[in-house]
Structures are given as structure tokens and as C-alpha cells.
Length: 590
Image 1 (tube, rainbow, N blue to C red):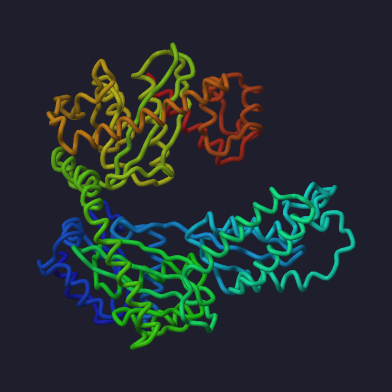
Image 2: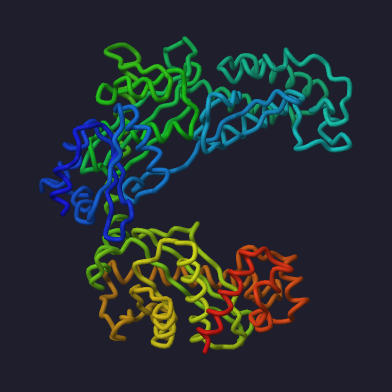
């Protein structure tokens, strides 16, 4: 079937999406010629990450475009939409801070981070600053030297800054003098004219010394040293004061290391180095990475790039100038970026190899051990209570061997006694009922903290929900250390050597879910609150919960009410969801 489909791909530019057995998009790529690129994956010459990708492909889809440029843009948008696991391996999604000058309604200076920056926003930004400490220190220094607005909002009365002469009292709208010279000084300094601030600091040091305020004078003297060391240390002999980035990359052992040097006003103010596995054509992968990078960061006036990267597509999409230097200082800067990329990758290859072995490698071994076709997502559960009160559960998620902390979930439990079996039934029902209703991605493996009772409780609920998900139990010994892995289908103990990567991997998962659950339990216990099932129903906040409890008194009475009655307090959809949930929950408890 797949071979026949490969023959029908057109010789056109576009984006292709590789899918696994669960029809989940695991990789998005682009190509000048879709037929040649997609077929190249199935010729049997792949190795490393590409071979692993191909082993998981069961189907593919594609979208044709008119030009290669459109294919690049489509690829980036689809990566954002699907977040495919083979597009994000080792890629860091961090954003760098900028120093932002705000003109209106009053002049302010602050450190800002943006997930995306567009030219049409017309923000006055300086950076990026890979060293956030340096950015904050510069902002604090300028705020000390100039009377900018320092507080948030519009207080009714002037604050201490006004009384010590570091603010003009913008909130009470005192007679504000002409501020154009102050703005010119600040922007001039941020654009590279360090003399302005140095002179200002020396002027203030002199005044403080004359007033015998030697402590404050010493503080400013230290700030002057900071300016001299940090901002003057890396001058580059390009004095046209154009903001530019210099880009090169190094490839080894199937991993690409991309180095970007930030040049602002003739100086290198820092850089970014990221590494990711090579799946497709190296130049295309690097350009795709750069397009994604500049969707989150300010685009400079000029990109100076390695000849391996350079063409007009980047410039056309990013609307900036692309320079591929052949000689001179810009060529030396590209060589500097290349050497930095090479050094960074060589230094980290051993660490990367260890991390891959301990995470992805152990995850792959676990998949083979349990005879699972796919093991991308693991969800692990743990319960906690204090003498039957304040019962809670926690769920942690591991994606491809790594914790996905933004997907962790907490559960306040309705069961108000020391009953692990019914606690597990309740939590599993609530989690996977929500997975079905909201069409969330189900896990490939569920790990429960405990023995056969917890496994049976989990399997019972999954069976009722008609979900086929592998379940295993993690038992601890009397010293609370991971001791056994129990197969949820056969209830047999699966032997795992304690020195193996799998054992360390499972221990890490069990420790993580235990830590997360215990932390939540302490929070609940400190508040002295007993869990309510209503806290976990989407659309029911504190006001609606109080109204429901006042009218019905218990969740059992709420279940007996019809949806029309419930709609006196809740919107129709929330009433229907609550009714369905309570019906299923009480049925599961029988």
C-alpha cells in the first residue's frame, strides 16, 4: 500500500507529514521535489535518527505549493500545529530577553521577552541579550541615572523614586519638562555610544563624592567597571553600526550544531547555539530552524551566513538582507561562528550520548521488553492520603523518555477513606473519560504506583471505557525503593537488572510521580480542604460550586437531578458534562 502511494507523489514543491501507527504526525519536512524527497526515505540507506523515524512510519500525507518559499512557510506552520517529536528533538524553545524602550504614555525602560516579534509592532527593542543578568543590570543603571517612570500602572500618589529625584512624578502629572534629550541619550547608549553613559556616571560620582556620599559613589564606580568590561570587551572592526547576525553550523554524528552570533552596533553582545538531529537535507534543516528561530526573535537588518546556507529564500521570507561573504571581516566572523558551533558540539557529544542512552535508549529498551509497537508517551499515577483524609493523586507524563511537566495533572479525590483500589478507579476514570471527551492523545503505557489491586482497578476502568492501553505496576520495597515491574496483562513480575538503564529510568519516573503527588498533598493539607469532585469539572468555578452545593447538598443529589434542573445554575454544555461524568463515576464505583 505504502509503495503504491509513493509512486503517485507529484514532482512538485511542498510539505510532507510522516505518520505513525496511531496516525500521529511524527515528522514534518519540505522539499523542492516531493517525489524525490519522500521516496528517498524508503531506499534502505538511512541510519541513526532517520532510520528510527522510517521504522515508525506507516503512512504519509503531503501538501503541494507553488514555490519552494511557500513550502518553507507551510513547513514551519505545520511544525507549530503538530509539534512532531522528530522535529523537536534537542531543539530549545527558549526566547532571549530584550531591553525595550517605551515612549508613551511616559518613558520607561524594561527587560522584555516575546514568543514572537513582528516588525509591524514597531517596538523599540535592543538585543537579544543571552545574558539576562547583563540586560537587567543595564536597565537598572539607566533607571538610576535618568528619571524614567519606574512603577507599573498609575498610582494615585508619587512614590519614593520621585522624592529621591529618580522619577518626575508622572503618575500625578507634575510639570514634565522636555524629555527629548534624555531619550536621545538613552537610545544613543543602547545603540552603542557608551561615552554618553560613562560621562553621566562620572558626573554623578563627582557630585556624590562632593556631598561625602562615598558609598553611593563606590556603587556607581562599580557600574562604570561593568560598562567597561562587558560592553567594550568584544569590539568588532565593523563600524557601520548595523544590527546583524552571523550564522554557521557544524555537522557530526548525525547532529547539527547551529551557531548564531548577535552583532549589535559593531559589537558581539552574545550568541545562540542549538543542536538537533539531522533527518532530512542539512541545508534545508538549518534554514527551517532559522525560520523558526526568527519567528520568536527580532530579525536584524542583515544576516551574514555560511555559503552552505546562503540563498535568497531566507531573505525573501524574513524580509532582510542575506550576505554570503567571500573575504574580509565578515568572512572571519562566519569562521568564528563555525568554530563556535564545532567546539560546542564536540564538547557535548559525550553528554548527549549519555543522555540519549539514559532516556531515549532506556525508553526504546522498555518498548522492546513490553512488546509494544510504539512507546512515545507514558503516564504514571500515584496516590497519597493522611489516615484516609485529604486524598489526592498525581499524574506525570514522559514523552520519548523525558518529563513533559506542562502536561502533569493533579486530582482531588472524592473517596474519603484509605482505599487505594477505589481511589485508583476514580482517578483513572476521570483522566481517561476526559481523554475521550476532549480527544486528547492517549498514552502508550500507564504506570501505576502499587501492586495488583491498583493494576486491576486501572484495567477495570479502561475496559469500561473501551480503551486498549498497556498497564504496568511499579512496586517498592520496605525501604521505599523501586523493586518490581508487574505486567498488567498477566500480573507476572518482569525481571529487570538493578544496574540497567531501564531500571534507573523506571525509578526516575516513580520518584517523579511520588514527588509531584506528595508536594500537592502537602499543599492541600496545609489549606485544610477536603477534595471535591466539582473542582475537576471544567466550567464549574467557585461561584457555581457554592450554588450547586447550596441547592443539592451532595454530588449524589446532583446526579439525581436532570440537566434542565442543573441549567438553572450551569450553562447547558457544562450541565450535560457534569451529568455524564457523575453517571459514569457512580457506575464505575459499583
